[in-house]
Image (cartoon, rainbow, N blue to C red):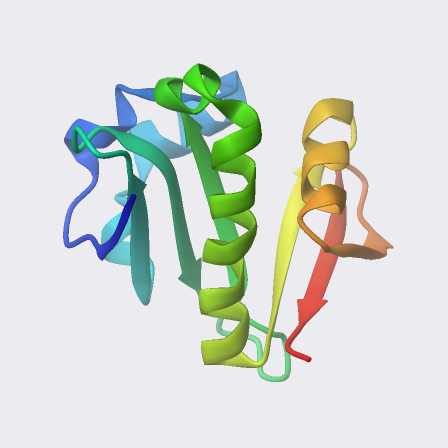
Length: 136
């Protein structure tokens, strides 16, 4: 397993399992360019398993927002990779002190996943649930 900082993720996105909402976001925005930093977790063959990035909204006082994408290779060994993903999530949390992630209310599977990673729901909008994780 290898974690690397990515300068560009365009080619990696074709290997990601993403919702229609994320496809629209990825089609309209360069996530790597908008993000302060992007990390890619790769298997031993170099295939991406998981991609996360952090960006900050311009509103003062809000913690950075974490976005994450699972790649197709995650499904090869989900239990093994899940441990690695939990460790990777700690990298931005420790760098920034706390981060938030947003999940669409209709995406129950993503809500369970983000909860498993250690995030706690802190508020809701019309369409999303906002989760937060703080460094220990």
